[in-house]
Length: 264
Image 1 (cartoon, one colour):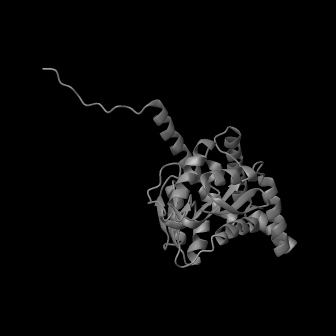
Image 2 (image 1 turned 60 degrees about the horizontal axis):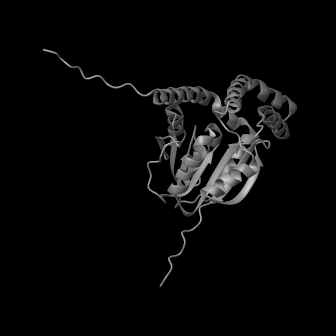
Image 3 (image 1 turned 90 degrees about the vertical axis):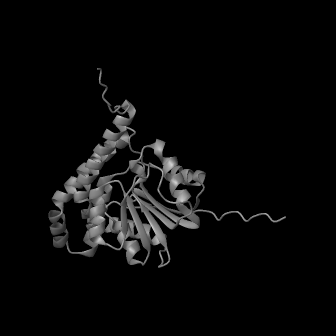
C-alpha cells in the first residue's frame, strides 16, 4: 500500500528573499540601536528630536502613533507632554528599550511597509522621525497612505527624514561646535574622548546606510520632493525646515477636514 506524506510547500523565491532581507535589516538595526542613544549627547540631535515632537503640540487628550519609534527618543518627549502613545517598530530590541525608558507607552511590533492594524481616522496625531529614508522608493507612497488613513481629519503629522547628500561629518562638526559653546575647551575634549568609541560605531553604521542609499535600497530626500510626495498623498504642508546641521528635513503637515455633506 502506497503511503503519501504531507509536505509543506516552500516559499516562492521572491517571498523567501523578502523574509531574508527583513531579518537582515532587523539584525542590522538591533546592533545599531545598541549605540544609537549616544546621539542623545549631541545638542543638534536633541534639538532635532525636540523640534519634531514640539511640532505636534501634544496634549493630554491626544492619542499619537509614533511610527518607527526606534529607541523611543521622540516617544518619551510626547509621553512627558501628557499624550497617550502607541509606538511601533519592527525591531524588538528597540521596543524593549522603549519600555524601559517609559512604561506608560504602548510599544508594539509593527512594520510600516505593511497595512497598519488600526481603523481609519484612529489617531489624533502621527509622528514618523528618521524612518522614511530607510525605505526604498517603492514603499513610500503606500506607507504614507497608511499613515494618512489612520490619522483623523484635521490631525497633525510630523515627519523628519535624511536630506539628499546627508553628511555625518557635518553633523559631527556641528555637535562639537555646539558642545564647545556650552562648555570649556577641556570639557569638550573630555566629551570627545568619552564618546569616541560609540561615535565611531555610529559613523560606521551611517556609512553602511549611505552605501544602501547609493544602491537604491534606501532613499534620501530633497525638500521639494518630500513636499510633493506629502501633498500627493493628501496632506497639507504647514511647515518645512532643515535641521540637524541642515542634514535632515522636518515637516509639519495636516490631514484636511472631511468635506461637509451637501444638503438638498
